[in-house]
Image 1 (cartoon, helix red, strand yellow):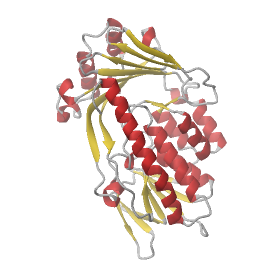
Image 2 (cartoon, one colour):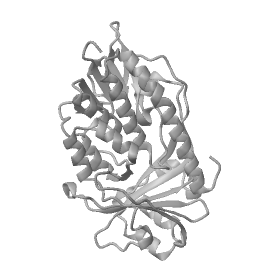
Image 3 (cartoon, helix red, strand yellow):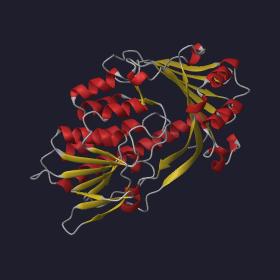
Image 4 (cartoon, one colour):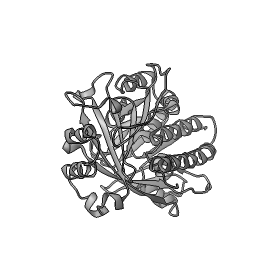
Length: 376
């Protein structure tokens, strides 16, 4: 590009921040606008799996010292994946040897976000809810905020998640679909807790064969950031019908009410698993409706594009949502930093991002079907 463009990013999630890091590192003018009033506002989950693609994207996007910070505050690497019945009868255990300490395999979502914010204090603006945008007569993009005010740039990247306001304006026909699962997330501090050996390492899936499934994954920090304790992530998944709770009730429940639901729904499980739920932090439970993006065809490229869940909303099965968003950031940054006109850079990014994202959604849905023994 012959001139230095100004890039606006709607959303300070993981993909948006990785993109901001890469563009700032490359010398571009970047402004990130995030609706949360502070960096620590919403509960969106806990432990995130980072795979080889995510590691490569982080190394490409982050300055070396920021990557080191993220790695040093990530979880201790583990190499086990297991599946058990709700009576703790082994179905499958697989080990993945050869994982070296220079790799990141799991992170705490909030700690990871704090790491990605490093050095971006003047570029990330909290309390700015992007409600829409318009293309100016000069071909630039002007975004407006619900709180008042506006900003203008040469490119707007919608990285504002599943409820993306940018997507609603840019691709009003693009939809997400309810995949028929609800997830109740919680966590159990590991200090002093009784954890059965079967779920004490890696990631473990437990199913009762009647529509309930639970994932367990410990996060033991390499170095404890901000006094956050090591914990066991707990996820209980089922259909709304299997939970027996309508959405208006589920999403209105207090954290303790969600904990009570999880305890009730696992009352016939192995005593060691029941004890895990009983010991869990009652204030840590949050509900999530699992959705997936519907495949859309390409569009004429211009000064607006999308990234991560804003375009290819990813179900958590497969643990690839964050990694796909990080790959989007890596690809878009590389194109924007190349010596090509902006619209050509956006077009090149979208040619890669769209098929990759929706193919990954298909794989995640197939994984969900296998976990619940149902058709995708």
